Image 1 (cartoon, rainbow over the protein chains, first blue to last red):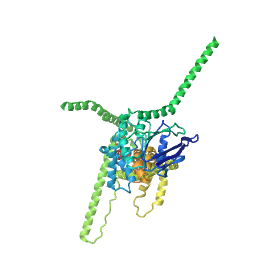
Image 2: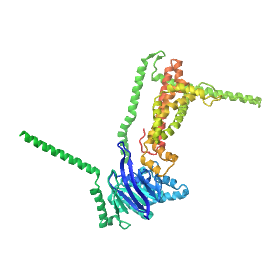
Image 3: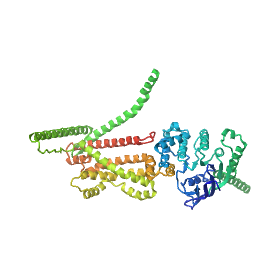
Image 4: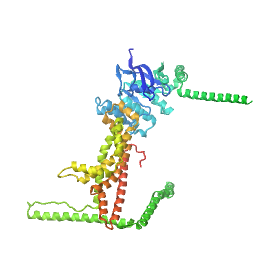
Length: 293
Length: 324
């Protein structure tokens, strides 16, 4: 593998529970090239976040490991910046100060004070937040908070950008807007990105590859879909594009036919049980009435 | 424009008036009722020092205490003036004469005693907070530390100041030995007793506040690899600030209660000693004077709590939070 940049090497994750270890992930194996945009998609509870946290170093794999540029990573560091789902900005710091905290930490030896200021402003500009730089998170909207979260992650100049459902908490219009921004930034900076998402359209629109995960326990990679759509991609044009719809269809098929939502299956089983019970009641009554006769 | 003003005026005269009745009239009526009950009830209780004083005699004694304070200040000023004159005369006669400057040694007035009490309670409170906040942060961050400290805290917390006092007195007498002490022993004993009793709420609340920090914020700190001090300063402290302040307010309230008891027994010249001395004195005015002290103690306690609330509002980053 010549282009190996990030290698998630047969990662297995067991969580201890009172009833013995619970295997959340089983031999997740994925090689990512530099500059690739990867989406992780799967039903809730399939361990997507666990994969991301292991790459971030926030969790340690039980077996296997993560290798970045030939070095194993097993603790968190700014070279694997995380954009959290609920933005995780420090509420007592302004947008600027939130980014500053990261920049000061990463570039304290390499950048001068004025260079840092410039770099912070540059990154906030990148996510179109220059107008509200000095506002507190409580004074800006959800989408803007997430922008600042992305600016903070980008400002660390990470080798890998990890995003945990970054737009999951946003309304559809804001989400679309954020996706456009992200594509723009991505075209510019060519970061290596791993993004968790629930949204099939988002995955197809943004990714180079979509990694589809099977349901837990013992979740693993079910299928990998290469998205060979030319960039820049346009949401409206693509919505009528047969290739785009084909990819979309494949993901949907994986999610809703081969890997159905475990909660749904459970519900159906319960329903079936109920029907069975009712049916046996009916039979029982019939038998009884016959006996009486 | 004029109609708008009129409308505003109108709304004031109706709704705000109702609001004003709620805010002012009801507490005022309740106060009147309280004073009346006190006045009637107290006159029926006959003690060895005469009838229990009602609001009127308490008010009289309050003005007497103010007069006594002013009289003492006048005497003091006069004393220094005489001393200055005497010294000036001496120097005029003989420029080389040694001049002695003595400080006034009159007995402390009620208001001097209030100041002593405040000084003592804040010494104890600040000392307690300086111990409790760092300890709380550490035990909030580390489960091991929490498990280690928690049983000790739970046992120490309910101990009455009166139980601590003999021990503290003995330890202070043994350890705090100096020919020219900066603080009197009674002061040190009282302050340390306050510390011992008032540090627990701050410690517990800080620990709870710190341990309930949003997990994501701690993840941010991990990803950024913040060192321990930066993490505490930038993430832990601001995040736990509301809980720390809740603890501090409880602590100051307890400290103020404890102080009065401590001063009575340690004979620190504050409000506690005032109450004790009046009790021992047993004149016909004593009970009224003690009641003045009781009301003043209550009022100062209230002001201290409001002060902490103001401070909390000032340092709180979340200006929209409702604090009460």
